[in-house]
Image 1 (tube, rainbow, N blue to C red):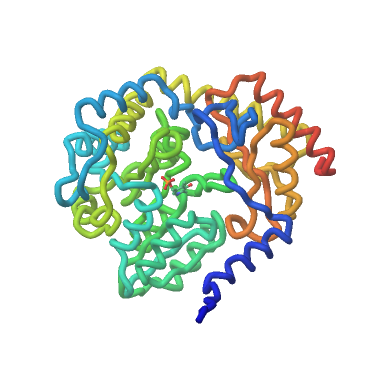
Image 2 (image 1 turned 90 degrees about the vertical axis):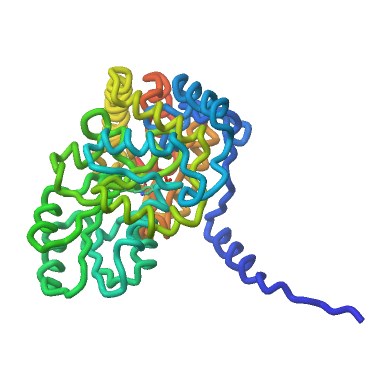
Length: 399
Ligand SMILES: *Cc1c(COP(=O)(O)O)cnc(C)c1O
């Protein structure tokens, strides 16, 4: 007797077909070789405006050397979760280095920026507590909020007045309150109104938390982030950053008081139940922070901003709408998701890789390309990219 089983996952195929029918084909683009300003994706060399490799550190000499040396001295893996046997001297040294860099008492390194956010919010807040969150906060913050089971109230993007309205409405909330924002918003490149939000946090007795994933290595003195850039030292209780973007490797961290970090060592679930970084990654990050704090680091940050200004000025002059960006993140607004997708596809064919983003990463009807320049792009490469973006934009009647 033959038994025919129907595939209980067949609805996934249906959903994929639906997405394809909307003109939203998706395939992972495969990078062949190193993450560089001009790189080979799917066998085709393109000007790469798609990475978060702001300072070009993914291929930096001193980081490479540090990684290789750590493999020699410490092997290739930590071998256990940090709370059992997997905390190496390197992990402690990096945490100390980051705390010093950020000007906080202590720091804990997580496996990623995502787990740093989600693990911290879920550990610090509980079901009787309240979270007041910007509507465009990163997915990892949203997931952390959900995991905490706290009540979540969302204020309009960057709108301190709307945030204040919520603070007033919840003034007598019996539990703990957290006010949380991205420092730089990842899809629009705009900067949070941190001083105003800190005022509110102080007035209404909230814990203040900032996710500086896109501003570490980009904003503030030597890339210390938005808290430094906007003069909010001492006013933010929890500062999250990533090691995966400007720092060039992988990981996330939380900076704050000694007791916050000690608490996270014991209660943040990704820290407790997932193995820590291999030595090479930790050593890479150490070398990255050393570089940031040197004159070479300063030069790279200067170059990043010069390239950003050049690129954004040129796009604006061509007639593209790049929104309210204040950082190297450059959205090129299209609106319709299928059209944004087609824009990105034609650019790639013409030699520029800038991915399109649509729902659910951004709101429906707000699809866009998201281009990021780096410190290591040459001026001629950016000029050429702008020419191609202009030609392709004209072919789609975007300008
Ligand atoms: C990228 C990003 C993260 C996640 O960082 P990873 O280290 O890649 O996990 C968190 N928050 C924001 C705002 C981000 O843009």
